[in-house]
Structure formats: C-alpha cells, structure tokens
Image 1 (cartoon, rainbow, N blue to C red):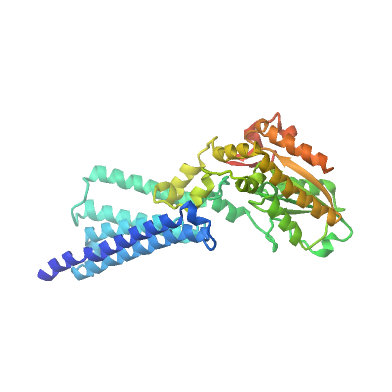
Image 2 (cartoon, rainbow, N blue to C red; image 1 turned 90 degrees about the horizontal axis):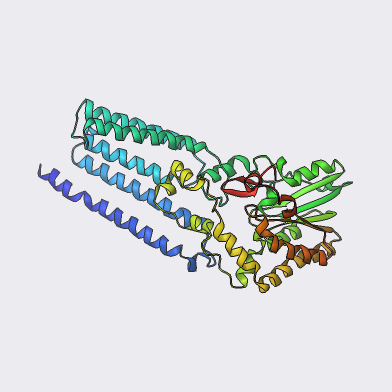
Amino acid sequence: MAREKMDRKIWPFPVLCLVLVLLLNEWTFAALTQDRLVDLPGMHRNLLYYTPWMLRVLDLWGLFAAIYAWQQKAGFATLWKEDLGFYTTTTVSVFFLIYFSNPIAVGKFTVLRVLAILLLFLMLLRWVHMAWIRKKGRAWLPMKPGLAVIGLLSVYLFLEMGFLFVARSHQTMHTFASKIWFQRYWEENALGYRDATHTASDFEGKRSILFVGDSFTAGSGLEDPADRFTDVVGKKLGKDFLVANLGKNGLGPRGELEQLEKYPFAADAVVLVWYMNDIHKAAIEAGHDPAGFLQDANALRPGVGPGDCSYFFNFLSWMYPNAAVGKNYYDFLQAAYADPLVWEKHFADLKRIAEWAEEKQMKMGVVLFPWLRDVKGSGVAMRKLEGWLQGQNIPVAAMDRVFGGCKAEDLIVNANDGHPSKAA
C-alpha cells in the first residue's frame, strides 16, 4: 500500500516534464514563425510547419508511456482491460494522437488513419460496456447523457473517416482537402510540368508553341488537364502543331523567364499567360506589403484548434463558400497597380521575356487574365498593360473583354478557388 501511494505521488512528475516540453515546443516555433524570421536564408517553410506537429505527437506518446508505466507500478499491468481509469486515459491518449498527427503528411497513410479511427471507435464501445453494463468503475456521467456524448463522438469519428477521402481544390492550396486533391489529380513530367513528356523528336516537323505561366496555365483546380485552354488549343490546331505547357504554380514574370531559359527544346513561338498577381514581386520591391494574405498565415502558423487538426472541421472552416477569399490580397494588388514605380519594374520584367524571345527568334504573344471575381474592376490595370504590349508590337488577348458578360461563379472552379473553370 505504501509503495502504491508513493507511485501515485511520483507519476505526475514525468507528465509535468512532458507538459513543460510541449509548452517549450510551442513557444519556440511561435518565435520561429514570426514574419521577421521566416524569410531568413535557410528557413524552410515546410520544416517550420511540420516540426511542431511532429513534436506534439512525440510528446503525447511520451505522456501515454508515462501513464502506462505508472499503471504497471500501481499493479494494473495484467488487469488493464478491466480498469476503467486506465481505459479512459488510453482512449483519450489515442484520440489526441490521431488528432495531432492528422496534419502530418495530409492525404497519405490513409489506411492507417482509418484503422486508427476504427480502433478508437471500438475502444469507445468497450468503455461503454465497462462503465455502464459491467460497471467496472465509476463513470464520469450518468448513462443517458453519457451515451449521448459517446454517440456524438462516434458520429464525429465516422465523419472524420469520410473526409479523409474528400478532395476539393482551394485557392490557398494549404487545406487538407486541397492537399488530397493535388495528390489525386496532379501529375508532373520529368521537367516538373503538368504536361506530357516531350522529346526532341516530338518537335521535328511540327510548328511548336510554348505556353508559360502560373497556376492558371498549369490548370490548378481542373481534374483533367485536357480541359485546360492550352490543351484545347493544341487539339484545335491539329497534328501539325505541338503545344507544350510550361505552367507552374506561383510563377511570375521572372520565374517564367527562368523556365524558358532552361527548357531544353527550341520552339517557334511562346505565349506568356499573364494574371493579375504577376506584379507581386515588383510591388514588394516598391515597398508594398501584402499583409493579411491568408495563404502564408495558414502555411506557417500551425494551431491546435479543430480546424487545424481535424479533416472534417478543416473542411468546414476552410471550404465553406466564402466570397471574400483573397480579398485582402486583391486590395493589395489594386494599390500596387496605382503606383507608377510598380509599373516601371513590372514592364522591365516583361521586356526581358520579350527580348529573350526575340533573341531566340521566337514569335511572342500574351494572354491577359483578369481577377475572375471582379472582371470589370480589373479593367483599368489590364488596359494599361494591353496598351504597353501593343506599343511593343506584341500580340495580346485580353480576356476581360471575353468574360465581361459572364457571372463570376461560372468563371471560377468553385467558391473558394478563383482559378479558371472548364467553362472559362
């Protein structure tokens, strides 16, 4: 009896140590993910995002091990199946192990996640059997409200299991469902493009066009790459033409020039696909701050709320249709377009691409995409750019002239993804 009392006094010590380690983890990574540090050389964004999750899971495993060790010392090693207290701590520990491990490698290890949820469900049933049928210990709640709580938890677990398989594209690309979408529908060739694998022989005897741009060109949000405008163009031109898609998510004019310079095959023409946010880097250099852009906030500040850890609640909190998605960023762009210094830098970036195409003896054209949620409001910026391109004798197609009479919801992939839909 004396030893048991001593063990009951000693066992909270390792738990307290683990809690302190957890708090230290949280403080450390909260400091590392501050704006002033996150862009320092050597600071890898994914490392900063995933490391706190990994440490939380390790802390929880340590907590679980400490509780189990205490139960062994207290004499419950062979009777854990009949001990309601131990079963309660085990069930709670497993729940939080699942909860905190969800953001790690989202969309992967799905079978293991399903098995873990099913195990937790079986443990809840076992807890009900022990607490209210066999009465092996004192339950925290009377039977009727207790069963209601267990029922709600069971419904949540099955919803959680179902949303492990829900894929939906999203503008920020950081949501659980959008990561599942990319794993399911996004395939790249050896050069890193969402395109067929081309060889030098493919270009022989054909007129060739390179489309270069960002996620609008790559077809983000479209499940089938054949629905992209570049693929539609290639199909309409016929077998005498080869159309290559050099689109990559997040590119701007400088990144697009880099892609063209390192592309291994010569072509007859290049079409630059421009989007409203191509002015981003020029704007920052001119002193504009894209504060409030929710993509960076979500990517770098892992939280502990349901929307941060649960597939089901993450879907509800991020995927619920929200007309204001990206509004802060759009306001940032509009302010940038009103600054002559930003335009000067942006024109210089575009001119470098035009000079490269001239040097390579390639024809060049430009397609301009407006902000699809506000086609009319994009017109002022697009007219200025259209006029500059025409002054450089570069053919230009301004899509706001085509989309002017369309509804925004018909032009975008979904309410949370502003990329062009198949119809657009």
